[in-house]
Figure (tube, helix red, strand yellow):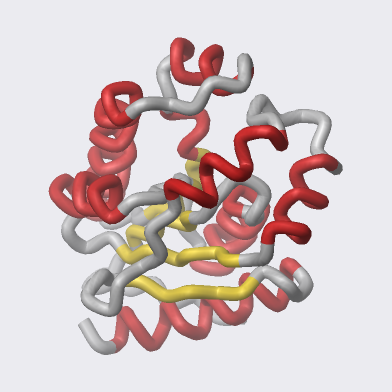
Length: 179
C-alpha cells in the first residue's frame, strides 16, 4: 500500500466508533500505512475518566469535554508540525466531533461500524481493556452516525482488519485529493 501523505495534505485522522469496533487496531495499522504516528485516544483521558469507565459508569459530557479538547489539540499540533496523526477516539456524537473540528478543522473521521453481535463478541474477547461489555448498549444509544456534511467516511468492520485498513486508506486518499 502506498502512503497518502504529502507536505500539502498531512492527514489528521480520527478513527471513531463504539467500543469493540477496532479503533485502536485499525488506527495503528492505518497510521503505519499512512506513515504517521498513532495515538490511542484512551491514553488522552484523565485518570478519573478511566476509573469511571472501568467501574461501569458511562462518562458525562462534562467528563468528555476536556478529553475532546485534548484530542483536537493533538490533531491540530500534528497538522501544524507537518507530521500528521491517526487518533483512535470514539467521537460518538456530532457535538463531540464538532469540538474536535473546532481545534483541528482539517481532521477527517473514519467511522467503523458493525452490528451489535459482532461488537459484543469482540469486546468479550478482550482481556486488556478497561471498557466493560455492559457499556456497549449505552455507547450504541449515544452514537450519532456521521452526517453527509461531516468530513468523514464509514467503513463496515465485518471483514478482516487488513480489508478495513485498505478500504479506509483508499477512501482517505480520495478525500484528501478532493480537499
